[in-house]
Image (cartoon, rainbow, N blue to C red; front, side, top):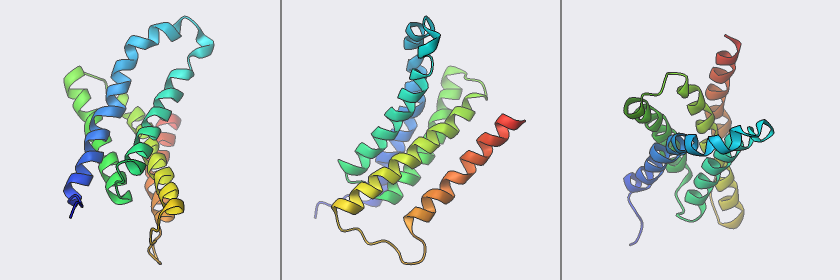
Length: 153
């Protein structure tokens, strides 16, 4: 039997969420000087970061075949914990937690893409009453609403 326990699968996604989203933001400060010389390229860094986080989650879901519940739950909890950890270690301001909302949306999008890809290429049974499609939308609503409220206030 080569199936990994659920705790290990959840832990892999948690560690990814703990290190990658906040860690890449922290490392981007070294690259941002190159892009600050050209203001027209200033949108490239955030878009590249969002794409990197999303593609990393897709890689975990496809290559390591993490189940959707572990990928979504571990990734989101790890992202929140990672931004909290970097806040303590580096001394980020509370404003960085607004960026954590975008990272959570990247994790949700990556989980959704991996789920759809796996569903089309493998046999995945979807629950009859509460489908993953509804769960993805319901989990994405709070970060979107909180982000919108942060913009408005």
